[in-house]
Length: 61
Image 1 (cartoon, rainbow, N blue to C red):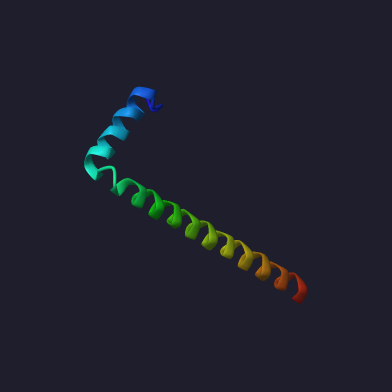
Image 2: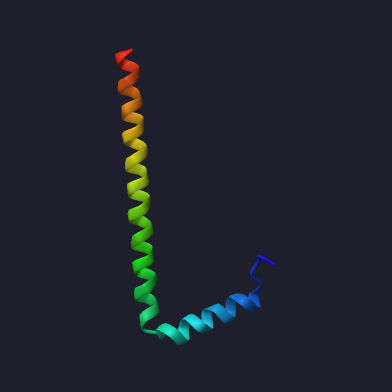
């Protein structure tokens, strides 16, 4: 319980295909991919800001 087998994944994919149709799925995946990229960019920006703030704190000591 908790792990998905091949049968479960195929059933999920079939349900998604029935709900959204074949033409809509590439658009959904493109949107998902761009959302993940934006999240990564934002997370990277936060890391750079934290590093810069830490560096400036060390310089003032």
